[in-house]
Amino acid sequence: PVQGRDLRYNLTITFEESAFGVKKEILIPREENCKTCGGTGAKPGTSPVTCTTCGGTGQVRVQQNTMFGSFATVRTCDACNGTGKIIQEACPECRGRGRVNKSKRIVVNVPAGIDNGQTLNMRGEGEAGLRGGPAGDLYITITVKPHKLFTRRGTDLYLDMNIPMTVAALGGEIQVPTLRGTVKYTVPEGTQPGTTFRLKEQGMPRLNSNSKGDLLVRTNVTIPKRLSDEQRDLMKRLAVSLGDKISDARPAKKNIFSKIKDAMD
Image (cartoon, rainbow, N blue to C red):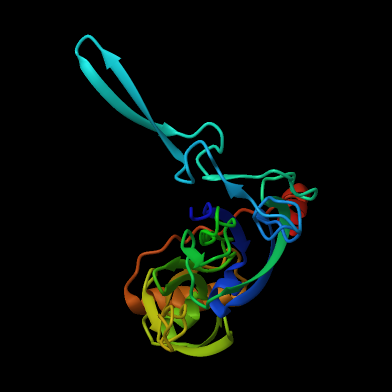
């Protein structure tokens, strides 16, 4: 008996499907045992007979006599192609092969937390074995589509998030997107650009575990591009109180074309 050939399949899933798990139905082309003859290759009602050339071993011994002596070699039997059996009446369905090409639908259970490039092994879902051998396996390699917000490293997720300058300076509450919805987070007073906050258990699940990684949020402090006269005066007073040197020049007035461009930005 010879084990069937292993098969490989590439399956693409979304970032959310890798986080929560998913069931996917795939179509696998493969060789299966012929149901008409049961994989023997013989016409129903008949059976393969033992090869008389090799006596059922599938191999023949050849004796060669040379000037240096006598040598014996073993080779595959040409009469039965190494099977040890001769099919006298071939099955009309598989034409004596004992196997037929089929496409089978298989449901794949993708576990939560699977990562890009990991492989699932489905035993016995490969091609059928020869001469009663076991079927091969099916190896499914997972490709995870990238997310527009999150980057994954192991089980941790990373997110770059803009916060207003005033919230960074004074502290305040922000809404942080996660894979499971939006959560509130209180930004401490005096937060600097590039500061990273860690939200526990808001990352990816660990395979075959109930625990999860974390979500790491890196802050980007946004500076307003335009200020009203009142806002500008307030900023000046803040600068003076902090001892910062600032420019007294006011921004140049914009022409109509610049205003149109700003409106379109």
